[in-house]
Amino acid sequence: MKQKLLITRRLPDRVLDAARARFDVTLRDRTDVLTPEELRAALRDYDAVLPTLGDLFRAEVFADVPQPRARILANFGVGYNHIDAEAARAAGIAVTNTPGAVTDATADIALSLILMTARRLGEGERILRAGKWDGWGPVQMLGTHVTGKRLGVIGMGRIGKAIARRCHYGFDMEVVFYNRSRVADPGLPARQVEMDEAMAADFVVVAVPGGKATYHLIDASVLGMMKPSGIFVNISRGDVVDEAALIDALQAGRIAGAGLDVYEFEPKVPAALMAMENVTLLPHLGTACLEVRENMGMMAVTNLIAWVEGQPLPNHVNP
Image (tube, rainbow, N blue to C red; front, side, top):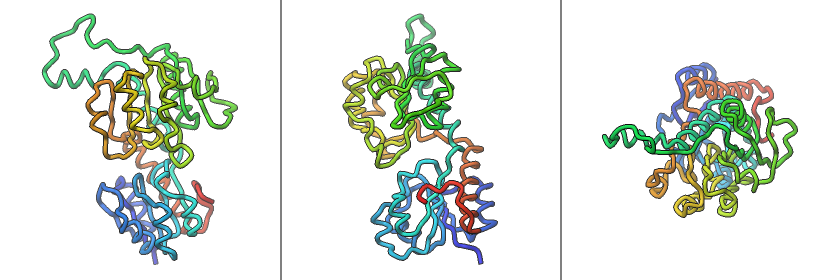
């Protein structure tokens, strides 16, 4: 008999086919996150769960299901801050993720946000589509030059390094970075510095993992380290940044602009952010390429198959 698997959001057909070949799959074909009732039912009624961003498996959820049927949460995504991995382990439930598959696509989005914000591309398209463009002029929509500027990366893991490579080798940017642990080989000419020096770069990109250790890592005091001409980009997790503090810094003109793909309370985006033309807003598109999402899904399925077969889990995050 096949193990019962709950997939909490629709995935690419290739992934669903692979999962159905090995599991008795229930597909929750909706885009909203699991409700509190559904979270508890997932642990109670299924052998395995393939959750994703926003499915909040917090400590209280595990506490409410003291003898869960589920034995693995194979997360779709590299970030798993929506899952209390320690509480899951205490409940006897393994947690896996999908690292590596997301690196290049997420780095590409970071570069998109840098360019869109610096060169006012979103604002320009809105003007054109509204029929308000009167023609080219020498001082029309002057933005910020990117080539040759300094990049500050907060978090020099796989994604941080991929962003740094693109900026250094593609745009001749000087790279400095802040990382909580020592990075012996950043893979390119780059200097590891303290937070204040990294935040004082021309462009700052946050690429740390989400979770308790990085919650509001970027708060008002850290944003205060930026210079007025600095542009801030976040492609990590929304709650890494104190969103209210970011809005305040933007409205007060203490930083020049921001490019965001993630939000503290997504899918809710503050009206204050949407009202500012110097802010680029994307609907969490970091990994939104078919081949990337397929690779993520297949990695999650590989973790599930390893669990069924009693093999070591390739991407076990709470051993």
